[in-house]
Length: 291
Image: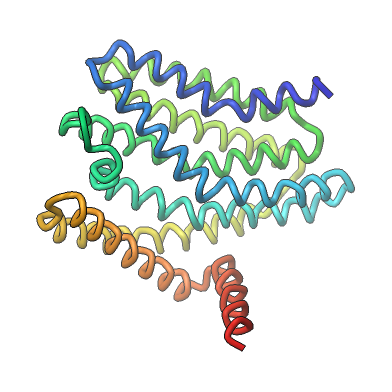
């Protein structure tokens, strides 16, 4: 049991290990950078935990059952659905955070000693750290898929490689671009882990529906880009009116609501099947409730 659990612990701890390493590297930067990186890491962790971890948690029992019974085709199908569902959430969330990062930080943290400089460097870290959230989801689903086949070694090896990549990139870039280099190192680590796990899974289990994942991903990216244009335009127009906490919160929420509406509309127009399925369930529930 210990032989199985230990690699799992290493695999699941990679984000925390990277944060500890990058926080240590940030200690060589000017005052405020450690706090800024910590807050940016906290935010990305909170967003990912809120929107994506639930999908991974829900899919794990299904994948475990299919892996233990040898239903690998069913496992592959559910794995791809999980990745598509996570991407459906995390791609627009990531782009939204990148555009609205200053307002998010202002609303949550700009008080006490958290001054304009603190907001600026935290926003820089959040910009690059948020990119990694998309790859966290893909990586975690593949990790769970490997665990479902009692393969804990592959995720552990990839996690160690990811940590090494983070250290290497962060050490190189922090000298030139400061806190941005640390954030890029962390996101690059997640991206490389996701790609390597995908490659290893295909090698071990064969084709797993990558074409469906790419097709759905393209629709989600297009929908998210259209949403981003709407959010960017609204943000540029409304920013000058965001004077004080209440107005900034109000207008930021308005931008988020409009952005979400645009994104949902695009997914319906492009017939993203995962969303249409989710929409059907919600519509049926509401109809049943009204009756």
